[in-house]
Image 1 (tube, protein in one colour):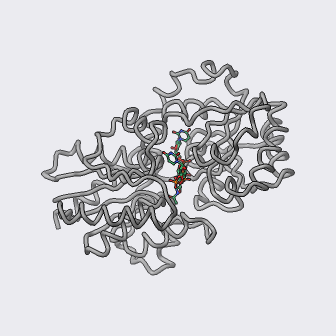
Image 2 (tube, rainbow, N blue to C red):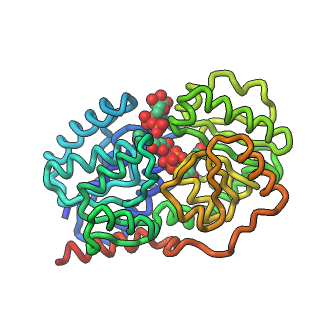
Length: 362
Ligand code: UD1
Ligand code: UDP
């Protein structure tokens, strides 16, 4: 059997790493190829993840780069089709909800190749998010739906996906967290960045709805500046956000702007923080596993398990909500239960490869 895995953006690498490891380790008589679309291309957004997560060099890098959604997705589709024509995979695997995910899914569908979607069924029900369309469209054409939480299964069933195609396996991003967290905490990130363990916050921002809108971005920066007068905040800045922020933060000494961090440095940093502010999808999940309070600067989440688990609170960009949630955390009023989401146990990729093996032998 020939399998092509499609990755392209930062969170894809982290989700794919344990699946690639499993596929290679089992020594099936399978040919596995890794195709990098090149959606993310900076060292800090791509190469460093391959090094730190022990991901083999991609067999192919399509080098697509940045562009409008249509140009980027269409260019990926053209290049992916050529690769599939050349190699004729029996199965294509895609991860998450980025444009690379959708491009791989549509080409597999057009060429009638079986498609597995890892992290299927998540829905924010927010039709302003480009990722929501990527999720819905990918799930419209998949054959194997690997889900991370029970709400995803319910969403897929509601959309008419038959139950035998849905596999509740857990979360491969959490498999990576399990594998690397010890190595990450040994990096002593707080010390390296001159802050005290549990005495600082971390912020990440990159959603277009927050950072491409200058009114909202300014509102977020104003409230963070207010909070940073009491708690230092480290801000590894995503390239999309960097472009839009210009010099807005250079005079605010308590918000430490740094380049995007490698995976080990980043999880090492959030693991020792007292709270995280974010609009990321994956970071809501990682803070759930690490029991770190997370303030999500969005009005909705496609990952409701993180709210049910007690770590994550949705505040949107409302100043008063952000401040009062921050105070609740600082005052020790936010209680986090001692439980973890079902099947977030480091074995999701084992379950995925078990399911593929069963199908391959039928
Ligand atoms: C993409 C995903 C988003 C995901 C995020 C993870 C889509 C629609 N969006 O958003 O779901 O949460 O990745 O980080 O797929 N840029 C660089 N260097 C890079 C990559 C990007 O400078 O290596 C800059 C470019 O100016 C580019 C901009 O960042 O135009 C946005 O990149 P893009 O991949 O289009 O979207 P993200 O915001 O990264
Ligand atoms: N991450 C990282 N360095 C950073 C910021 C994030 O390694 O500076 C990791 C983080 O641990 C998580 C993933 O990137 O595993 C999340 O990616 P991102 O927030 O870019 O995308 P999303 O999850 O929102 O799609």
